[in-house]
Image 1 (cartoon, rainbow, N blue to C red):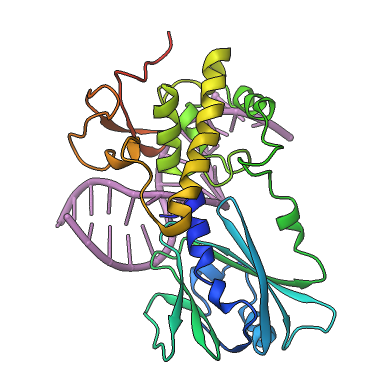
Image 2: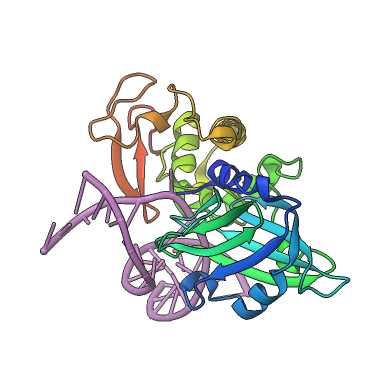
Length: 274
DNA sequence: TCCTATGTTGTATG
DNA sequence: ACATACAACATAGG
């Protein structure tokens, strides 16, 4: 489910826990989401600690804690990825927990919950003075200054033969972009999702770049704030139902598998080059 | 019963 | 080493 803006929305759900002390950590050790985490250390070190801060990068989240079972000069760094079905909640006490609530941080005032039925998400835990190295090495955000047209075009050239849809899903260059956002970007830019990434002309690249930034910006201001849908004029509102029509031009929308993912587009507005 | 699902990753192949 | 394609992961809902 969660892409850039959804991730940010769920991230914010833990805001009420900022500054609160974690009195109890409950987790389902052995579940797939903990495959790269030391759950014993996580539970032992976070108990008694205070949730200090957090941030998101693309689809990734990082929360920091201090005190409790942590070394005096270190912070605990809890990295979360929501996978396909992950969500974060803050629940009032008392909170029993759902079968899929695999990580719950109980503060005196509420439960901070990570829920993930399909277990495609991931939990990481490290201690250190600084944020973990993997975090510092994450690529620049699409909405940052470093995300230049040049950066985007270099990458399109490297993946010249791949369908442009598949390239937009690559988190190393388009962090946060997921299936619906990629379709939205291509539809707004008028590019066929199966077009080889290396064969877009200059003007087309320019439109794509603008659409990539525009979709991220508007999604963050709607979905990212209160989970409100993006504008009705977007493909988003029409893409899920069978027999949908293009909100620009009224032609039919089609769905097919491109780049291994279900892809929705308007053939009338999105022509294959050549 | 069968199909689908807003994601990532390991593996096989060129 | 690099690019590309696809199965696999685990569960729920239509």
